[in-house]
Amino acid sequence: MKKIIAIVTAFFASISIAFAAVNVNTATKEELKSLNGIGEVKAQAIIDYRTKNGPFKSMADLDKVPGIGEGILKKVEKDVSMSGKTVVTTPAAAKAEAKVDVKADAKVDAKAASAAAAKTDAKSDMKKDAAVAKKDEKVVAADAKKADSKEMTPAEKKAAKAAEKKARAAAIKQEKADKVAKAEEEKKAKADKAKADKESKADKAKADKPAKKDDAKKDDTPKK
Image (cartoon, rainbow, N blue to C red; front, side):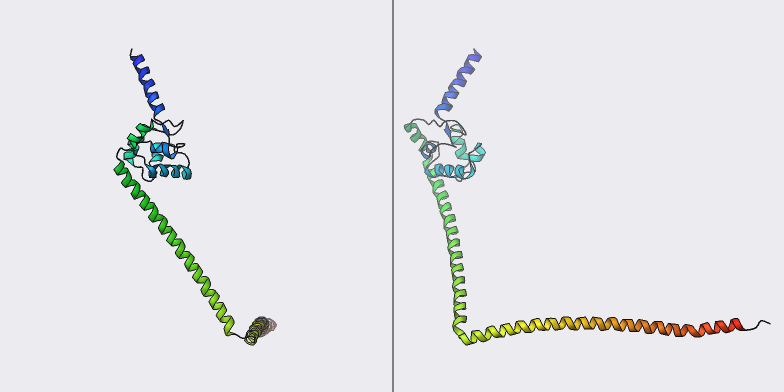
């Protein structure tokens, strides 16, 4: 008897799910609106979220949708599925469910819409400011270039170009001269070092010569 009752209970539970299941991954806006506490804005928010982030995998994912909180989740969890075909109740029943807590839903929807609009306006203003700043920068650069062009006559431009060329040639010439001077300085330093080493050796040899003579004289002295 208990087994029969369990089977019957499961059967009616499955019928209930079949006739009141809304697949949040495939449902249209109207089908989503049939859920308790889901209005125009929340239905669109669900569609926008799944379009951007992919299909919902759990109720936790649904909780991430702007405007969907714990209260709404409790209202719709028995009528929501993540797979399968969407089957909603009759239009009359859907309307009756949609009217539940309609004032609170309208306030939340208005708040979410206002926040979204403010965020969009802020981004739009930032883009406009950046565009204006970039445009102003280009205008200033163009004006500066134009002013420089107007202030210099063709003769002045030619003279400036010649002076720039002359300065560049002088810089190259100076660089070469510096290299030659450095090479000569290194050569002279090397020669001086060699000369100093040679003189040092000569002085040492000269200093050692008398000592050798004294040693030779000591050797030649007759022994008594």
